[in-house]
Length: 251
Ligand code: ADP
Image (cartoon, rainbow, N blue to C red; front, side):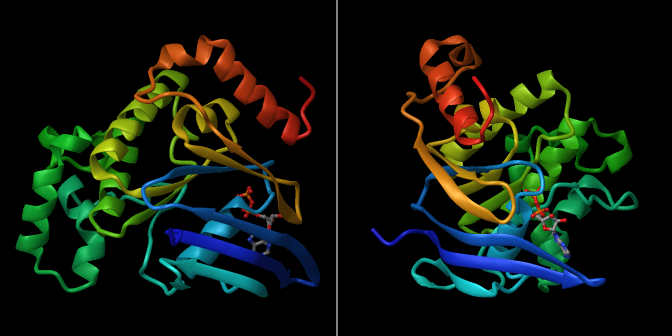
């Protein structure tokens, strides 16, 4: 099967202010259609750089990035950056339609399409609310809805739950898995939380410290649907231990 997304020998070094920062040495991995893959690695190992390259915000120095077997072009994948970037002066509805508006979709049509999706994102009662009235979890759901509405079939999510409290984070993990089951989109998720990586993923890709290489690919052999109780099982613990070891953390 042609992978949905494939990176082959991707390298990237940043230059600026008299500094040379080799971020990615040699990164290769692929994601199959409909798969949920998580990229994990130490802070500063180049995870966001990988996403920026896939989206086309950066150019690799070497290597190839393919989507559906073709060289990646900007606009092929949906990207949710770490910060939710909701505009405080726009309502939830008008925030989530922003990318479509930019592309020239008439506002009424974009709004109608977004309204249909609001219940799935738990935002039905908040269409006309402003971001300041939303909880952290709701803001992240709104940001994800905005990404989903771009109708790309690969979604890149950069630490979407990083700033949330532990309980909200767990709720959103379950919600995200439910959403993924419904949408059947290909997901590339970034986190530095090992348990989150195991809980969500079909496969976890571990990057080394900078300059990054792939040091491990772990297939998560835990059944779905997953429930939070899973994290207390020995099987779950064994996956976590394997990832911690790959990250060089004593277990
Ligand atoms: P992660 O997402 O894993 O925390 P990043 O991809 O953000 O890591 O960063 C990887 C490394 O590249 C870091 O050392 C960071 O300082 C550096 N870096 C990222 N973007 C730039 C840039 N635009 N210019 C210079 N250095 C950068």
